[in-house]
Amino acid sequence: MLADCLPDGMTMAQAAIRWILDQPSAHTICIGAKNIEDYRSASAAAEMSALDTTIRAALELWVKALI
Image 1 (tube, rainbow, N blue to C red):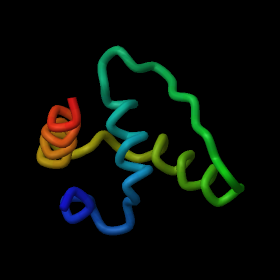
Image 2: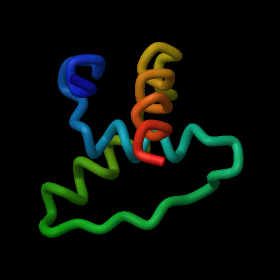
Image 3: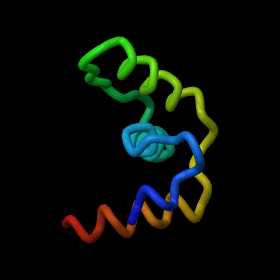
Image 4: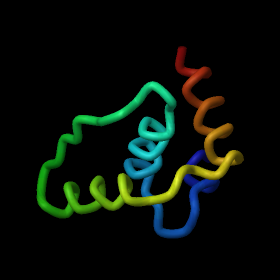
């Protein structure tokens, strides 16, 4: 499962945000939040360092499988 590849404490939503921000062509992202905790979690993802290459590769395989 994809969630098993994530570092401890990182949510799937945070991984998705970080993956988008790690793309060379992405300079910003619009975040939708249902409540303040969702917003804080998304904001924390923007502050995290770039995803590890292993995690990035797993996410990219998952995205390609959807297409």
